[in-house]
Image (cartoon, rainbow, N blue to C red; front, side, top):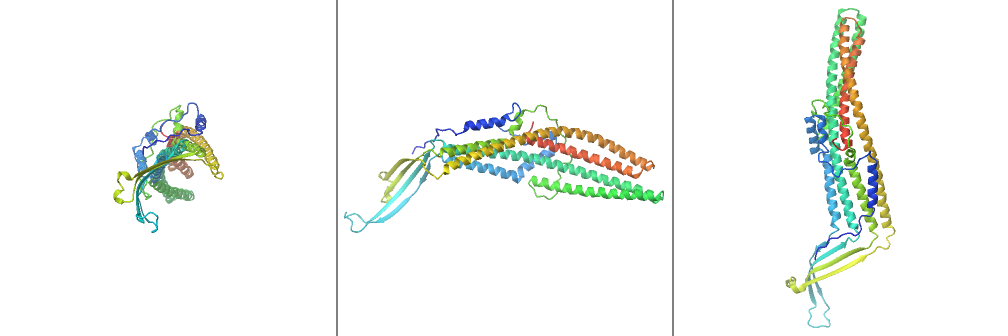
Length: 458
């Protein structure tokens, strides 16, 4: 039988509404913002050059290869591909083959003598059944499955981008924690040296009451710095394990991470093109899901129209097994039927309302996602400027605090100031250096957030 290709006479119902709704979403963005036709290949990782760290790039690559959550997202893409094939299979004929053998006996008093009362029948049929997609209902179902598949592909890109950004954030946090731990260790050593100086003065017996008070204050300050040291060791250990999980490994707490904090390679260019935001894979996935919902709604509406089905049979039949393949044993038949639904208790009407409500839900979800995306970009852009200025101020503060600590120690050794001034100067220097490291790390994390919000590099 010749294979016919089905074609629907009706396009997806509501296509104009979809274009209007999507255009309205794009119009929410600043002037000239529009969706890109295709996602750049390196959108997920092309922005890593901003951090000027080969180590960081290697960590992200390891995460992309081994992270189980990303592998799960890839498996969902494969599932969507298979579902698309399943939905498209209904557009083609169903062909089955079989073999039947039967044996029957007639009554012994039959009217026609000479005929054997026992009969054999052998059949080798091929059956063909095909629903002509006259209205395009099946094509709509296939289009919905294809749009869902494309949405899963976009979700995979979103997961890949999110994993890259999360790896950058966690690796940066580990580098920050290690730097703060090193600073805390230095602070403990400094406080121990200061305590040694004070204890020597106490041993000399000069002004013992004041010397005893100075030693007590120094010991309390040392205990506090030792407590901070243990807290920072715990932070390093916790962050190591979190990074190891992202990299797809067992959280043994042995991941070295980065040797030091990366540096931001370039400033954010002024006047970023608007289409950078609407290329975000999560927004593109939402738009694909909206298309899938409209296709399903269209298919639900077309279910009211009559369906036309062709059936045919071709094969061989014979009373003797030896003659089953003989030319004169051939049989064939072909038939067509049409079915029009008249009453189903409101099931079809409810199906249309259900798909329309799903479309409206996805449209509002798309809108909410777009607004969140705009907020994330604007926030990250503003934060980059604030964090850059804050880091510059803290750098100046750290330099001055370090100078003050050196001067306070010299004056105390000469007896020109008290121990409280010395301890306060040391604490100020420690706090300023710690704050500078934290802000530098926060700026790196914010840059990763910006690339995640933009859907890739500048």
